[in-house]
Each structure stands twice: as structure tokens, then as C-alpha cells.
Image 1 (cartoon, one colour):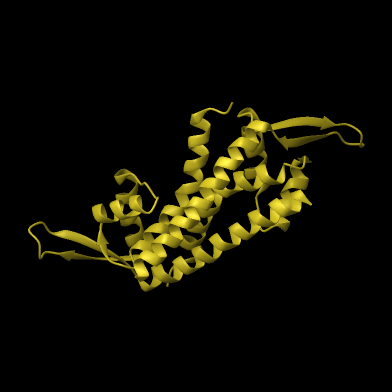
Image 2: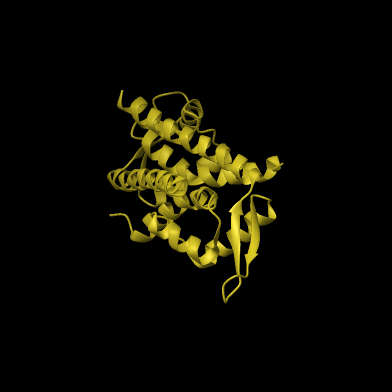
Length: 113
Length: 113
């Protein structure tokens, strides 16, 4: 019987890289951190604020997101949006994600033969 | 223009967790480290020996792989095989991998709406 701890670690490792993909996809429509967190959760990407917020700052530093303050509401919020560079990166990542799926399926079929 | 360095980091992060999935799938058919390395490479999972060998030992410690020495050839080789626990774990990971794909596609469609 495998421990839940071991399972959780492997699941986390599998998901870690995909949070970047999910964020870049989601931020094709601009949003602020907390709303993005909720949106990702609704779509089956439960992410911790302590993971997501530093990630957004890192992606902005890398030029993959741009940001803009929206001051129209009572509380100013920083809205992030996937930049053109982010879109280019996202396409590479999505291609690679598809390639991984193909590879896994190829392995499954290769072993079953 | 995004640097190749940034791209490589994100691609690596995306692939890291899937090496466990690929290894557990591939070792449904028993194999020794170097042969597995080659097999994964052929199927589009280029993995470094310095990554794969410690991973195999870790998966064995976690009970996800079993191993057996094959001494029939001139050089004894340690053959790994996915254990029943490893198979159970693999099914959870593959389910999760499918769920991630569904989530990403859901996000893409949600944003396009």
C-alpha cells in the first residue's frame, strides 16, 4: 500500500509545470491574482496563493505577462495579461505538452505489444 | 523575445513530473537502467542518467518498483519492474494527467468564449 504522502508528492510534481501553462492560457483574458486563483480552481487547477502570486511576479519579470493597475473600483487591483512573448512561450509549452501525451501513449502501446 | 534559458526552464518543469509516469509505464516490461534510458529517449523522453538512476532508486525505496539481479550475462544487471503498488500509483497519475489535459482544454475554451 503506497502512502498518501508519496502519492501527493508525485501528483504535485506532475502538476507543478502545468500551472504556468494554465496561467498563461487563463490570462489571455486579463485578471487580477485572486480572481485568477478562483478561475483556475474552478477549472480543476487548485493553486495556493503562496504559489500563484510569486509565480505571476516571476512570469512578469520574464516578460511573459504584462500588468496594469485598474483603479476604477474602490480598491486598486493589478491586472495581469499574457504578453505576445507569453503567447509564443505558451504555444511552445502546449506543443510540448501534446508531445508528452503522444510519448506516454506510445510507451503504453509499445509495452503492451 | 523570450530567452532560451527561460523557455528551457519552463519546459523542464513541465516534463519533470512526467518522467515518473514514463518510467512506471515503460517498466511494466522489466529493464535495467541504461536500456530504460535508451527506450525513454526513443519515445521522446530524453532523460539524463544523473536524473534517471537516482529516480529509479527512489521509486524502489517507495515500493513502486521492484528489482532483481540478472546474472545470466557476463555483466550482472539490475532489472527494475513496476510493482503492483507502482501500477496503482501509475493509474492515479495517468488519471490526473488526463484531468490536467481536460482542465487546460476547458480553460482554452473558457477564454475563447
